[in-house]
Length: 206
Image 1 (cartoon, rainbow, N blue to C red):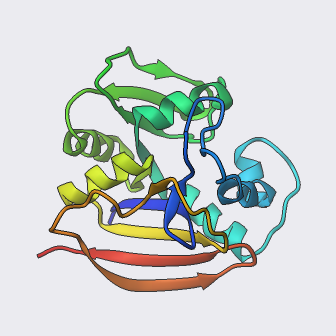
Image 2 (image 1 turned 90 degrees about the horizontal axis):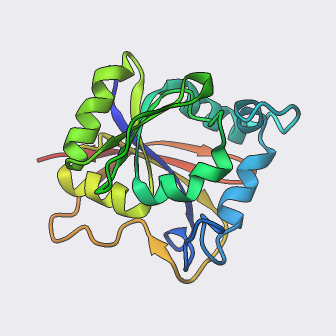
C-alpha cells in the first residue's frame, strides 16, 4: 500500500541545510557534504542521465527510494532554489506538487515531471499527490519547513534519514518547530552504507 514518506539527507547534528539558503546555494553555507556524496552514486547519476558511479549499498537505498516514489510534494523555496539546476528534464520523473502562496500555472517538463502549484495547505497537497501516485509512495521532498508542516499535520507515515558523518553546527534543523505534540517514532530499519547510515522510522499516530 502506498504511503507518505520523507527521505532526507541530514547531518549527524540534525541539520537539513546550512545557513543562508539561496538560489545560488540551495543547500546553504557549510552543507555541501550533505549532497556531494549522492552525486557519486550510480542510481543518482542514472537519474540525471549520466553514466558511471558506485554501485554499493548507498546506491541501492537511493535507487529503491526513487523507484518507490509515485508523486512528490515540496515547498516553494525548494522549487525556487532547484528550478534552474533541474532544467527542462528534472530528475523526479513523477508529478510534483509545490506548496506555495504564489500561484502559477502547471509546468509540464520532460521525462514525466510536472510541477503543480498548490495554494491550499499541506494536507491538500498530499491528497492531490496521492490521487496521481498510483501504487507509488508520496514523497515529501523538502525543505525543512514543508517537512515540519507535514509532521505537524500528521500526514507522514514513514521517515527515512540518510545520516552523513558531518557536523554543520548551524542552519535548518529537521526537528525544529514541531510544537508540543512531537510525533513518536518507531525504528523499523537500519542500513549501513559507505557514505551514510540509512535509518527508517514509522511515524506512530495516537
